[in-house]
Length: 163
Image 1: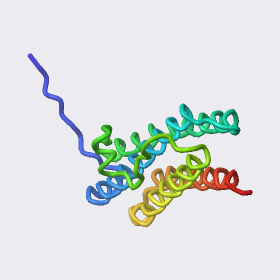
Image 2: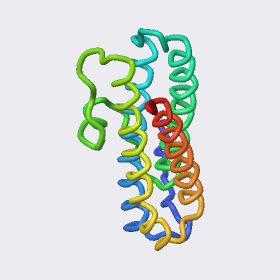
Image 3: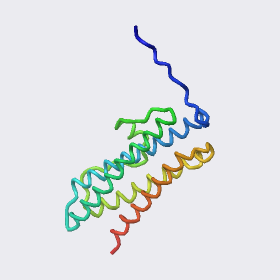
């Protein structure tokens, strides 16, 4: 005889409506983060020119960090009781970052990554008022960490564009 699985409601001290709003914001952050990850990995594979070695290594460090962050964001969405988006179709719909066509020159790759890092930081920051209103410290912690990484990475990339 098959057993019916009884699902328990999420009761963590945050209302259903607030958890849903936070999960929606985190889904946008996940979409931006995945798009940024894919862009960075693509540039790692395809960078050429005099800065090849340093950029190839830098991009690998960045996409590895981003890859690990995807799980943190998705698992927070799950902990709030909602499914995490996980398809390209969903990510394209939710992301604020546009995919880059073709293979840009190394300097243009850096420019694209600065803009994408900053966009991802803005997406995380935009969710903060909702998270603070819900008294959701775990999500606030995730957002703080992500904003810090994206702003620092944008600064480092931007520094490469100085003459």
